[in-house]
Length: 194
Image 1 (cartoon, rainbow, N blue to C red):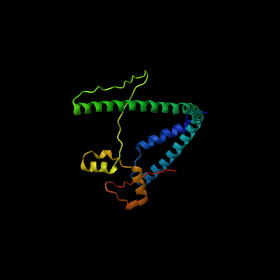
Image 2 (image 1 turned 135 degrees about the vertical axis):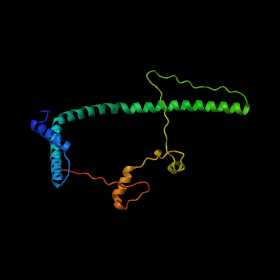
Image 3 (image 1 turned 30 degrees about the horizontal axis):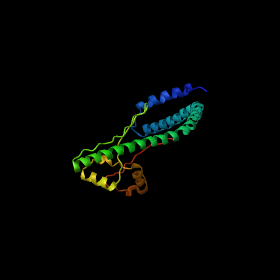
Image 4 (image 1 turned 120 degrees about the horizontal axis):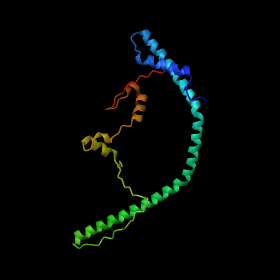
């Protein structure tokens, strides 16, 4: 199968795209000409997609087979890897907690009794080829308190992301009756050619 488009399609693409770059609508006749050209370009796009779908079919099939083989092999490794990652991370977290507890006890003993206390520092020697990454992340535990903090100006409104899929569903359900403070309905017009 040829991977390039037939010459007549290439010529039609060139002619149509050249014409489309200068097309303008000024009256009913030019509107009809642009609409007909849009329909022709849609047909041309589908012809191109059909051609390349046939070209890509064996490649896509081979890609799917290789991905399936890869997935099968990774499925054997991933559970063990995840379990050991959790085990190692849990042990390191425990060692950190022990260190913090020992340090807190030492500070408390010094403050209360004035006597320094030896801190037993757990030693964790990094394993070659591994590195330890710690990161902090936010976890919302009280949405109402977060909203109140935004309202009070303690944090910016960017911490509250609107759930657009839910809002769009409400707009579709309620139509012109949709009303939510801070949200307006946009009317988007799309032309579809068949």
